[in-house]
Image (cartoon, rainbow, N blue to C red):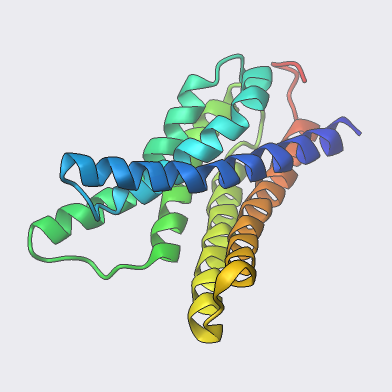
Length: 196
């Protein structure tokens, strides 16, 4: 029962963080324009990582005692692949741009870092790496699907905006469910080094 409650709390917190990431990305884009780095893609990954990290902070603090390292793993982990793309673009040899691929790689990077943090509390924390990469990939797929939906159906107005935001928002729920199920499973396997 405790594992299920943890998984549900985690899914909800992650989803809220994902929704929070939308205005954060927009604010970072405006800030980027103001300081002369408009169009820098690392702001997208950074905003997504910040939003989700903020959403998860309370539960992480309860589980690990400290939320700061988790927050930074999310923010930096998600920003890093986009930063590499930006650097290659500035160097004149840009890598192909793929939002889903960069988010999946960012989820993998964050997952490796977070698995190290979880290891202090849970046995089998290496599974978190897979769950994080899969969850972030599903979230990215939803964002990609929203783009395709918007472009192919040429949805406009309020209904178009709602469909677009609803599809993107669903990605955060998929991320939360995927990683929440993993966290619930890890809590069942706990080795007694921490408290729930």
